[in-house]
Amino acid sequence: MKLFTDLQLGTITLKNRVVMAPMTRCRATGNLANDQVVEYYGDRADAGLIITEGTSPSPNGLGYARIPGIFSREQAASWKPVSAAVHAKGGKLFMQLMHAGRVGSVLNLPPGAELLAPSAVAMSGPMWTDSQGEQPCGMPREMTADDIKTAVAEYVQAARNAVEAGCDGVEVHAANGYLITQFLDPGSNRRSDQYGGSAAGRNRFAFEVTQAVVAAIGAERVGIRLSPDGLFNDMSGDYDGIADQYADLAQSLGALQLAYLHLVDHSAMGAPKPAAATVASICSRFRQAGGRNVILSGGYDRTRAEADLSDGAADLVAFGRPFIANPDLVQRMEKDAPLAQADQATFYTPGLAGYNDYPALVS
Image 1: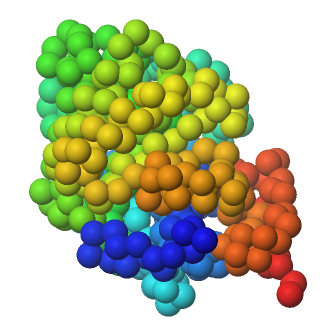
Image 2: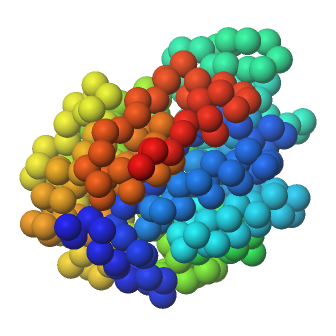
């Protein structure tokens, strides 16, 4: 099966085309990767590529409780054992850089940090805080031009910190309603300056962040994740012109010769399914401009993954929730063995339950 063949990704060789998708797990107490985190990723290093959970490049980006950061030297040091554990088993590791933007509560931020967004538009719904339980999401402050420059610089330093921590590269998180997606979406971006007002303006921040990260650590170490039509975190979904906007963005990103473009389809979780023509256009424009590989994710099983790899729709396929309950997912898929089911009630809770207590398959 092509799923279990190797692939050259930039300067590294992946032992298979199975990607562990980035998944928020909220176990990073103090915003540091701890021994639990080391064990969690090390146990799943049979994947050709692991993309870490969203890791904040800024104190302002820590919107959720117990998510990791990569903006301080202490945080970078805490990730070194994770990289070592993955590499010891022949796996490769990209860190996902995720600035939450307006998604969060100030109660989850360190002193002096604040919720920032392209516009002062709050996200609906509650946010869990360890100190006061569920609270409304806070009202973000609209970012100034200087704030935007600072945020770009934070992504750059975070990428350098990730490489220093032993990661093989980084994934710029421009999906799922977080800061970069907030710039892309007209519902959350109501600016009239060069970072808003048109599709090209809304694309600018995503491109500038990625371009700056590429300049800092090299295109072969950089991927990006997009979620066209996604509704998560109050995004607008299928707004007028979205297909052309994302295709244009993909073309400009491809010209940077990124290691990969990672497209996520949330329809398995109830969101609208992106039109096949939209996905094909995004991938085609990315590749034609010089982009190297495409990762597809969202509700995949072994059969569907093999089909999309065989017909060239994808170069790699990412699996999310199956990796939670199946640390040996690659081996199970190779044997076509049954998969354990994850307990959704423990996806984001602190402690070992639902994290490092799922057993491997007994032969």
